[in-house]
Image (cartoon, rainbow, N blue to C red; front, top):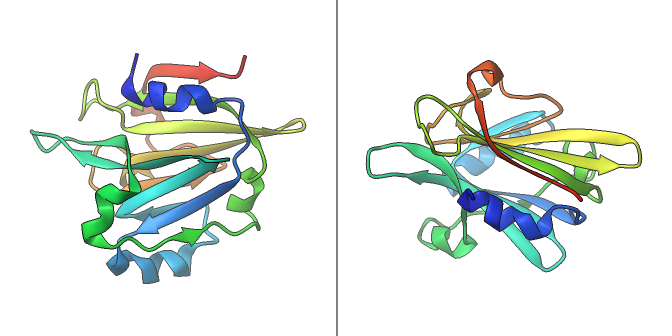
Length: 171
């Protein structure tokens, strides 16, 4: 089983209580300017809070320069003094806060075979399903680069290049 699937497993079916961006301080001004956009990109981490449980997603630079998505501890970034910015309760990001994590899919990209380039989160509220993607890449692409890309309501621009590795569904 994929490492990220082990991290997410106990949280599928739980309610997202909060979503927070943890940018490096040098990226904070640009991120704050873009907070209402459906696509965000920065260096740092993204935290998803499910009650007392937190998943902090970031990128990891492997031994061969292959950047991939991984679950970190916020303390991993202490030397870089990440800021903490909670997502607004307004659209587009606020619509997933208070929703149930119904599904998570993990994807790889040919530039980093066998490593996770992106995670698709499906949040459910009543009959509504909202996709949120978090991956490593640049702009709207998720492909193994050294920035986090978060996108809500649509998949990455290079969705056709991604290959499903594993999926978790609410039971």
